[in-house]
Image 1 (cartoon, rainbow, N blue to C red):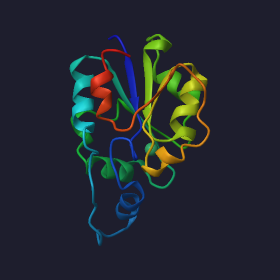
Image 2: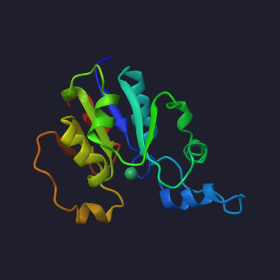
Image 3: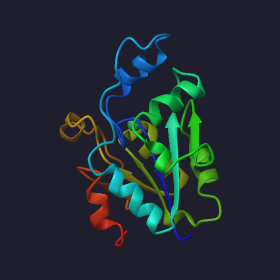
Image 4: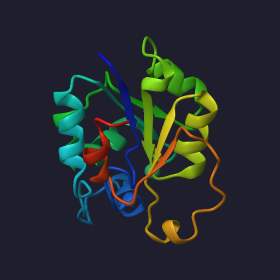
Length: 169
Ligand SMILES: [Mg+2]
């Protein structure tokens, strides 16, 4: 195992996070879940798997019990790559959690992939691992906030770009 890739879930590999959180929290299924994996996420996750790099998901869960969050994630088909062994649900993403996921792999070979500067990118840089920032919703690309100055930060427009750069990073 050469490298470690940690993916955020909401708005990094799947869309409509808030709507679907609502749908899966309702006691009765009165609203249908919508959306699914973002275009290219399937190929990216397959690529990590095929290279035998460590694949992990780190997701925040403030609103739901764990089973409900699993139902929400299963809806988009994540069980192809993830089960309870390689998913970590937390109330807050911290550098310590990221480092524990990366255990056994050198920091420069570890990558946190996410759409949130605050929750994904800053803790990853603080942990000393690499961060792949894919701003979303798209207006975040126009007003990205104050980007940290780091040579461990990679910014992509779309998760599909990860396929092109995978062997160069
Ligand atoms: Mg997210």
